[in-house]
Image (cartoon, rainbow, N blue to C red; front, side, top):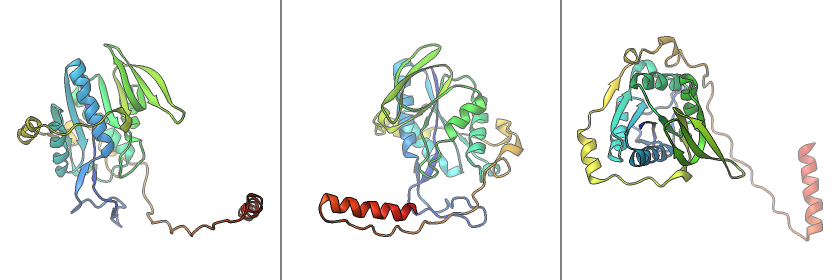
Length: 260
């Protein structure tokens, strides 16, 4: 089984700074880590390999320092790693990012399953995984909490919902986005850490994945961040006291004022 896991390196901080010219994240000098939800994607990819055989290829789009995240993924059990890195990718929104990753996946060749974390902690859009499936024209199942079964031509998974979960069957190849309920990520083994240090990280530029230049970076991004601001702090609420009847009357009056 050929499994592809897409990961992202994100800032390990809540104090995110924005470039006032490009309105993109300033990553220089900020410690980066594997996106937390992608850790579950890595673990599930490795578990599938352990169950069915095959290999796990981990891929990311990012600056050269994203090499660190890929090596960490190898230490956790992934077999091969690909870094898609080019200045032409700078400023990509979720659509351009998913296009770039899908072009790289086409270059990889045949695969059975693509696994992504449900969303990235720095954007929280949950759009890149579904975008990849759209560009590749393959089925997708989002918010997967359990992979029940995988055969030669289909997968059966549990998809988490607000009320519980749905059992979904999908043909292969497919793309799955996973939630944290799916597993508990392992710690890297000593053997894995040694392997990661000597592993060869394949690096591809835009020309090598045969990507359309007009679909990359800011030029290929149909959305723009025009303004970023911190919302004003909420004002303190009011504690209502008294018996239930009095509180109900006061609350009704307050709600009436808000509606008006």
